[in-house]
Length: 318
Ligand SMILES: [Zn+2]
Image 1 (cartoon, rainbow, N blue to C red):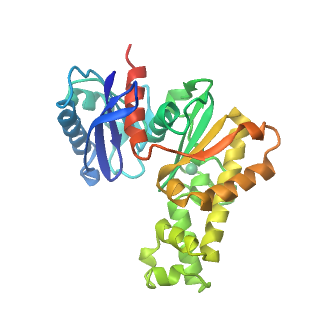
Image 2: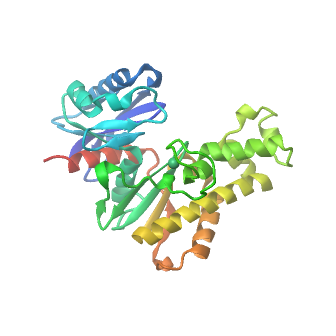
Image 3: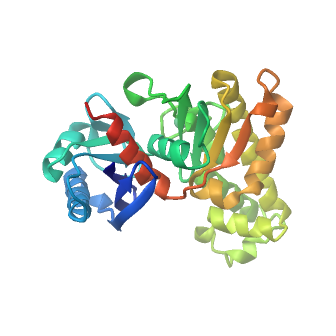
């Protein structure tokens, strides 16, 4: 079956025709997200891109869209969209997008879509229970339990980045304190690196940014760590340890066969993050069969989102 899959990102939009039997992408197009122009303009841009892509196929009746948001699956509204300004809760996103495209378009949280894509065609193939963490500007997640994407109340299950791992820690975008996202996502890694430079610790990061703190990014910290910089490696040790605590929580809750780590930073950091994660779960987890749980990186890159969105749409056909 060929289905439309859309990835709504904070900076770019992508729409694709997906063969959901093989997991291959037949046609795909991208454009920037007019993120500052408000919900209606963003939705019109998505619809226009979707119609362009649909014109390349035949008889496609339905689509799915992964959104950087807390998506209320009952109302089809986006209740919390941290990186795209506007009064989204007041905007009937699913209904308006469906009207503009001319076919039903089913929204789902972006990392829930990635989880579906990786489960069916990527690093999660063959598992019946798994968890997926996507580490980027924030940390998103998704869980599959006993062969089914687990959604919970209105699709709110799987917010793995908002497990509290440091009760007295920094405040999080979600309104609470000490979430995994506050200690292991991109901004936390960049902030720790900036602190090291400000405190004049001996680190290559200072020379890599030419003394300009605005240039501190997770990519720079990864570069320094690969060059053997002890401070940069310690930053990933710390983030990986917190991530490991979160994985242990997930393991004792759902006993997954596999845990996938992806997202821009999860993928780029690789073993810098995975080594401390694996060490922490070995040390801290004694109530699940560790030898039967694999922790691995995702495989599909940014194709996972559009593939998963298409798979989601097909589950919504009555
Ligand atoms: Zn949070």
